[in-house]
Length: 373
Image (cartoon, rainbow, N blue to C red; front, side):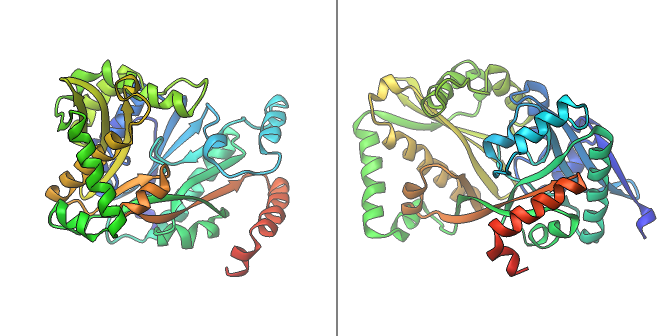
């Protein structure tokens, strides 16, 4: 049976194709259009390695991995004692590279494997894991990380540790299950104070002359959108440069226009804010927002949430099942009906001696988890 499966590694999604990937995808950031956008605009310094499994020349599993050249792991990965130092020393000694192989899709904070239906997932995972181990040996990567595994992903949660990965509870993200037939029904489902807040937000938006509209041709705004996003990015990342310039928005418009949805806030005919979402099938992800703060003075909350309300209206109309909201403004989103989702990180060390050290450390630090396993 194993002989019918073939593991292949690609460095561009063009060699795999749009239809095979999108047919088995259940997330907008694990689609041809999104990954092609990243390859073209290069917003993150990384190198893609797409590990795939074929069954009789049919794609049945797809795992996007990226060689982390920019230290992205250390911004969004769990702490491992001496990890950066060990990577630096082993690089200088020419033993290992100082890059982590990250199994995820950049900027979506999700790690997952796409599977075709009716195939042996455990067998496929073992094939993928062996191929990743082989890549790490050949290219001298010391660590592999599935940084953002959802607690709802029962398969990876149950099986990654059997492949030598350590399970670490990591972040809490937020999501909204769309279960209403109208926006008013959504508002009515909220607690009393939250209903008042939503209606007040909408009233403020109208009172200040801000109009929220859908913008289908967002490629034409490829110079404006990065400026608005940069305003927000600089506010929360002092001294850092936004990763998204005009080339990113142009590429997204070219390769993933069918996946992207843009809502803009206009005041006196000028765009002063936007919300960019990405959709695949019945899942919608609230990706990024941006604002012209001078136009709003010091408070943009009413515009931020009105852009969100517009996306909920659209999701209801399009029969979207879930909107992912990531991990910012948690309390405000919980008050507006969102639920929490536990994200786990799974990390593997490919040196058997260091692995003994990390095995002791992790089992002590997270002993409550490992007692249950």
